[in-house]
Image 1 (cartoon, rainbow, N blue to C red):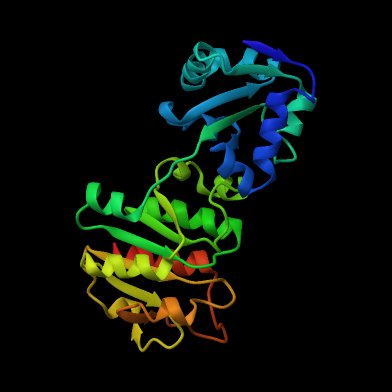
Image 2 (cartoon, rainbow, N blue to C red):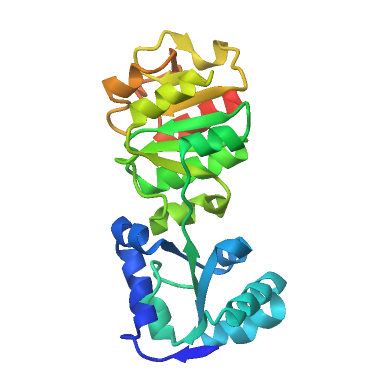
Length: 266
């Protein structure tokens, strides 16, 4: 296990780069998670490196079996490091880091791969231009909880490996497949060709989302927090659906709307 005491160390600089933006994460093929809970849930095959303070090591190596297991695996790979408190803070995106940071390998999927090798009757969420990291993370977490098989997002949607998105997923980031589509309209057509029924949350909808008998082979589309779905993407829906609201409320938070629709369909 290597001790790192310099903030200019190349491994430290790499973690800082990973925190800086999606281009760096995509280029390096890794992302950063922090805190005991998020590190504990990292799948073995996805773990890249672990960084922790001496105080964290002294406490958790004796208390947490899963953390000890992952640390031992990282040591065997030559990818476990003890860092100072100052360096750990530099590698963290939170104000009060817990003393452990890890880098995780990103995953890459295609619609065709998942449709061919995954669930034959999939439940799918389609996201267009979701901008708020908290909303994105909550949607990923909700999709897992509601039993969905896949999320497809357009490239205008916030990066799923954004640190704030990762924290909001509460671990679902490791288990919920997310595809960033370069041609969302075309991918929706592929879903329809495969027999997937596509519903869009839309202000022009006439039917209450609770009135519909959904099949298992279903996709739900959710649009941008302020503007909803673009006309191009909305036009791909087989049917528009709405969430009826009382009072003077015109719309719901995007992640709340997505949760209602996801659980109704599932």
